[in-house]
Structure formats: C-alpha cells, structure tokens
Image 1 (cartoon, rainbow, N blue to C red):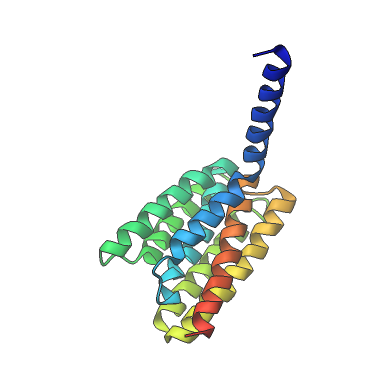
Image 2 (tube, one colour):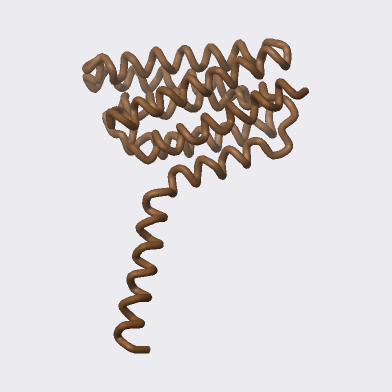
Length: 193
C-alpha cells in the first residue's frame, strides 16, 4: 500500500468515526423506538416510558451530573423489561425511586436553580400521573394520552438540548428522537385500530 492509500484509508475511517460520533444518540433513539413498537398491540403498554423519561432528568438534576441520566436510563430500561414478565408496576417503582432521589437532591442543596431539581421533580410528577391515567383509561384515550405526553416530552428534550441544561446533550437528543417516533407510531396505532 502506498502512503497516499494509507492517508486515504485513514481519512475515510476518521470520517466514519466522526459521523458515528455525531449520530449515535439519534440512531439509538430510532433503534429503541423500533424495539418498543415490535409486536405492540396496545399503546397504553408504553405508558411507563413517560415516567422513565421524567426519571432520567430527575436523576441528573438531583445528583447535579448531566451524565447520570444515561445510567438512569439503563435502570429504567431494566425495570420496564422486568415489569413485562412480572406483576411489577414500573411507574410506581419509578415514582418511589424519584422520591428518594428528590430527597437526596434536596439534602445535597440542589433546590436551586429553579429549572433544576424543582422543575424536574414537577415534570416527573406530571409524566408519572399521565402514565397512571393512561393505563386506567380505555385503549384509545389511554394511547392518545401517552402519544401526546411523549410529544410534550420531546419538546422538553429539545429545550434541554438547546440550553444544555440538566442532562447531557446526547441523552436529550436520544430521548427527543425516541419520544417523537414513539408518539407518531402510537398515534397511528391508536387511530387505525
């Protein structure tokens, strides 16, 4: 191989890594949305994702670490997965964990600024309430509640991505893509049923 060929190969692989570095959060959002929709018959089954989306922001705010949202996402992913094979209600468990984390955050002095822990705790309550209402409603109304709440959270993600507050930019991007795709897919599922 000549030196020019080595340079061209190096440039190409560097470009591929650079592109992957820019698109992985959105690509992961697409994959998780697709995986969530496979075999889904009732849009209300996605309701725990609402509580999970509030939970990851609350964790980052309570700990004062934007990167903490990714491990929190992992916890929600496992909890929702376990709930599918047990009688566990992931929304109730996420609310309980959120309460503990809010107390930890307050003890660590995270009550300020107002857009951090206080606002994230309020958002967690609203999203968890929407999830709890959705699962108790009929299939059409519950599915629409989930879809609309996901679109609302996508706007939340966009705001946090733009301001760079609370969670890492990669998490806000991932979550925004996931929320929009799930909301559209659930809307189609509900309205065509």
